[in-house]
Length: 357
Image (cartoon, rainbow, N blue to C red; front, top):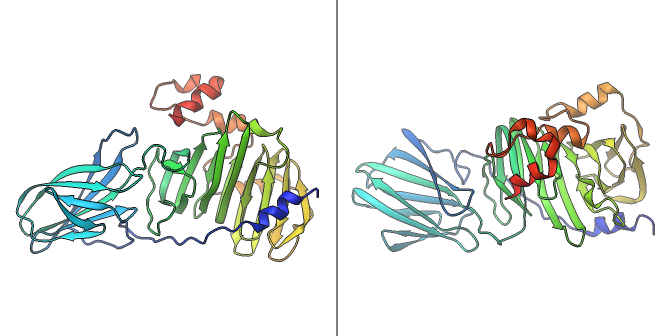
């Protein structure tokens, strides 16, 4: 059957996700008199992050939160429980804290307990190499964004350089915008007020195989999909919203999940195959500069030519108005200053791989 891949897509079930919003790792707003930010350098090139808040409180208790939760917390050599954990009645002076969780890098940190003050320690744990499928990095961040690792209901502020893993969820808030560079050298720009889930992302360079499945739950994202695997049979990259599934090989397009019942898509380069999630029997193909809408329980609308005003509307809220892979690559900054910016566009592959190390 010509469109059997689309029918198969419908049979796949995406797990529901819930984001917890707030200022702490657990979504609670903390009242504090002062806050200090500390970054601990460990063996990983990407350090775990530790945030310490101080508040006036009797007994000088220590509160330890981790993302994900469930880590073993040891204080001065004595196990104190599983995070989140409260350690009361600490004597003033240095406190040695160790945090361990399977598949995450262990943390060792020392703080100083003070009489009459509470120390709240919030730790964003970094995954160990080989634990899960790392698929890319956040290479650009503007404004506020959150991320939620797989198998946790907690979210935390997203940071520049964060490693992205299969199953992670990212959400931009207000005027927040992010850009993700995937390890297959594809790029995704996430607009403001958008929630994106990396449902699946597998790349096998030797076997020339790729299986990508990204979900835009709400909001807008532009996709610059590398053509490396364009010659394979059947689309190897899919994007889903609540109403539509787009199948592609190598192309550039923008997905706009406007509400829970409407999706608009514009193709900027090559072709996209699109269906309604609930009606996989009808497929439409969008060519360059073509646009289509998908309403709940309705087949995709007949593709029409997108005028410049429509394309500009799609690009609103994104951090880039690039319409080609060459343009988006030329916008990427050099990594750690190791390659001068002016040398980048002419050495795309060498330039990009620095982000993957």
